[in-house]
Image (cartoon, rainbow, N blue to C red; front, side, top):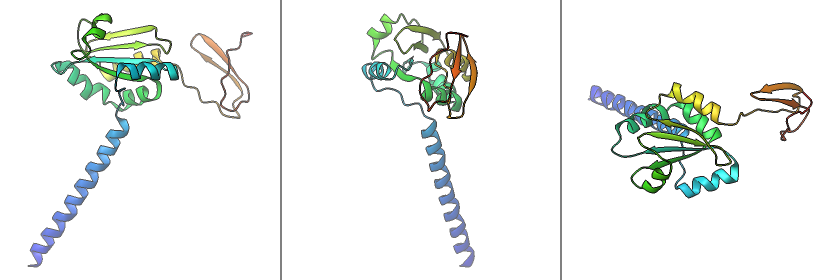
Length: 179
């Protein structure tokens, strides 16, 4: 009788551990998940309200490379973080939004299109993209995020501009014209 209870106890502990581990993994995956805008209209409203670039991912249920991109690229921790921090993401089903896909001139799937915060086309990436290929595209298309603390003094050079950091409390700092 004792071995049976021991086996039962070990089984229960293993089961609880497995359940707890899977819940932790699911929470981590939820934290890394990209929250795609519900509709094109909602995405555009968010883009206009925040000034963030709009990332449009065009996909279809029948597209094998789209599934691969969702599994490999969109679920990548670094890609997800960059998109959550800097973009308004919109996933468009090519079949449900055929008119928009036609107006965008999309010929193949998957396709990723990036628009600036002002709505101007920045870049189109046609076909499957690995995370290491997409990250530089996302970096180039999104505004730099600079942390400004109270004690930051000096100068930082960003691509195409010099920014003058004077003691400030996280306020916008305009480019210095005299440098």
